[in-house]
Structures are given as C-alpha cells and as structure tokens.
Length: 94
Picture 1 (cartoon, rainbow, N blue to C red):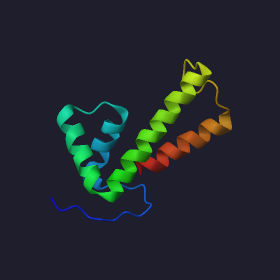
Picture 2: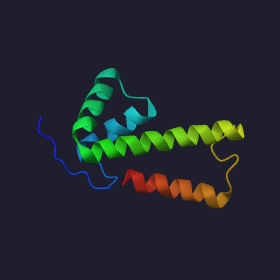
Picture 3: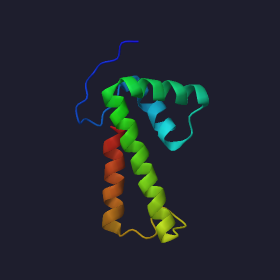
Picture 4: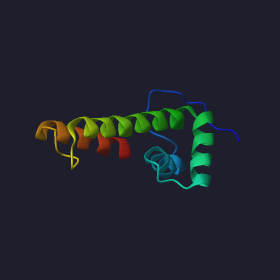
C-alpha cells in the first residue's frame, strides 16, 4: 500500500479512515477494523498523529474522571472548562 507521507501537525486524518480511527481509539472497533486502522496509522503520518492524539485525549478524560470520582462526564469540571472540552471534540470531529 502506498500511503501519503504528510506528517504535518494537522489533526485531520484521511477521510476514509476517520471512523475506524475513532473506534480504534475508544476501544469499540472490531479486531479486523482495529488491525487495519493501526496498520494504516503506522504508515500514514496524518492518521498516525490523529490516532495518537485522540487516544491520548480519551486517556486524559478517563484519568480526570477517575481523579474526581465523577459519576457523569460534567462532574468536577467548571461550565467554562466543559464548554472548552466540547469545543475541542467538535473541532476534532470536523
């Protein structure tokens, strides 16, 4: 397979890969989808960067929830901080 070598700091993955990468990052991808997404990300700078950042963000959110003993996603975050998190998610999903 010949993947593009764009390794810019863009958070935008290949269009056909975005859903697979998101499901891989959040742990909901089936084994074949996860394998293909990881293989592609290893050879595509944009998708590799996207997968690392989304996986890191999900991990940070889980850590924050555990630190605060939060029962819901909003517990422990100020309204302003929650708005910033939602804005970040919206930007990442574009």
